[in-house]
Image (tube, rainbow, N blue to C red; front, side):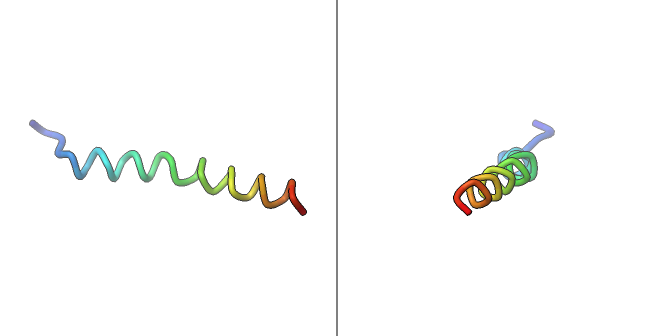
Length: 32
């Protein structure tokens, strides 16, 4: 059990954060 659940959640957050920000920026620019 080398990887704990908190580490998995942290890795997912780090991986998804840029994608979420890109989507938010894309929709904001499209609405403008």
